[in-house]
Image (cartoon, rainbow, N blue to C red):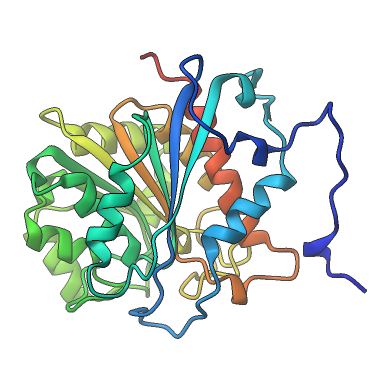
Length: 306
């Protein structure tokens, strides 16, 4: 018997699949670039090398191009240009290969980076900075500070701060109880990082929290990078995220975040990280949520004013 996650889809010309958005750029539509950065080798938790970017691309075929909420067909408004996957991003020269890949392709309104674990975030951040860290702000949706010492999926924010990113333009949303330590919370305070805990997030709307976060991260005309580590979500909806815990954000909340940040002209890049395909449930709910995040971000881009 075939698993639920691998039921074949049928072809219907009146129901175009979202995978058809992966095409070349057109002057008549907005352009978004997609890049796979399949990091895994430095993960703090053992994980497989199975490609999450490939699985997410495949999952796009499960969805259509039509947004009911906005009454918009993405196929008429957006081109998703696939830049492929970076080879061995964990190895020597990995950051340089990520930078070269992100610099390739057409001009775009948004770059979407598919991890891999959270080590992909520093590679992409460094590429976007191009040595000018004063041009960037960072928003993380994450259960963790990612301020661990060393080089791993637990250290991208520490690496960025050490490289020159100003902590006063970093906003971390969704920090969870029993997923961090007092030592790393102290580092965040010392660096001036703005923290919105999971408890604080319950007291305000996502729209209010994100509006403030975007203002803080972009102050002074900075471009904004958004890191969506899916372990910010409830483990029930992301079983393929090794460090996800019960009590995180719902799938709907994660999707709303993606559309909101995609709609903001200040956001230059968005990543989706911390998916281990080999750990996912039989119905592929983690990978499918990641594919929906891509589509929500594209829908957001269609809302941009410029």
